[in-house]
Image 1 (tube, one colour):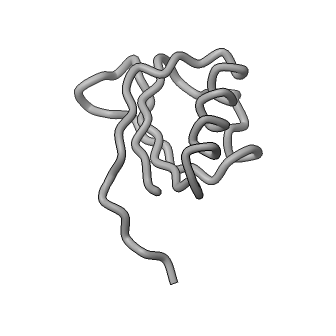
Image 2 (spheres, rainbow, N blue to C red; image 1 turned 45 degrees about the horizontal axis):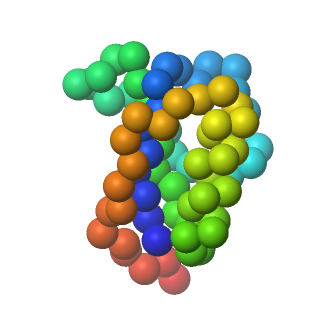
Length: 72
């Protein structure tokens, strides 16, 4: 399952890559947010990612599933 998650603020100094496999970028339409793309195994893993973001003090502002491309 592939997800796009937007969080408020910047991730400067937050070692998110130490916890989950994620790609981050700064969206041009929302300079005060960070867009994350991550792959999770199931709904329980997605819940864990959201809990982790919360524990790191980040606010999820948007989240949606993306079309999944199989990995080989």
